[in-house]
Length: 101
Image 1: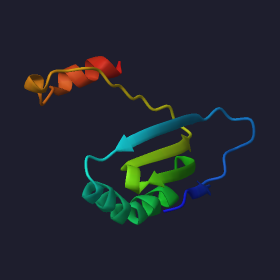
Image 2: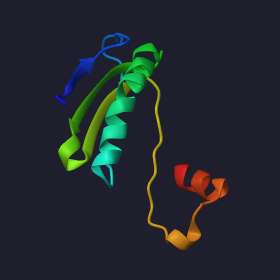
Image 3: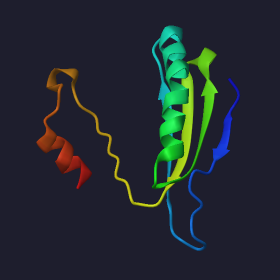
Image 4: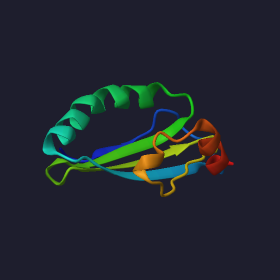
């Protein structure tokens, strides 16, 4: 699958600060990569209709089971990641909130 080009659902105002988010996802199996690809059009339709989306792109490397996303949005978003033991899963929402604040 080729890279889905930068799509602009909503044109941002000039000289406005935006928040750029990039991610890399890996699936465990090629079957997982295929399922990701099958769901991509539905997600892309959601992006096109999201009022806060200023742009998005997707780069897929399905045979490497890797997907890259790039997006820009108008409101600040917060993301967190932290190491945890599998014995601690699922983590509580209280812990999630503590990592996001």
